[in-house]
Image (tube, rainbow, N blue to C red; front, side):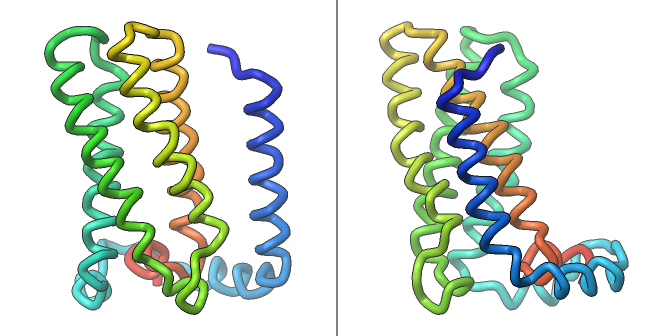
Length: 170
């Protein structure tokens, strides 16, 4: 699979924005990394999360697991179509739930919400392309959402001080 220059440029811009945003907090991240002690999930932290964050977390994890199965399973069969619809529902729920998660930026959306907008645009298009039997576009969009959105957002979720970091390392 090859990616075009537009994808590489977009990825580069996102990386620069995130790196710039994090520039001021590198010393704090270094201290957090030095103090990190991996452990089983801290259920006390999980219990304190708001319902919308729990919905986001659970649907994202389910979509990650189901997406991994879909990436390895044979395409175009009944299982792929059924599991694909389940994955679309999970990803859409995950994305919509982020619209209500604003605690990171004092009640406002943050740069991470750009991924939400992208997902809310690309996911329906990917479904339309599948229905039109435009397999190449459907595959690129879905793989981009799975590998790009989940990989990048998973890295962001584990930044020291954030909820996932606290849940497993704090």
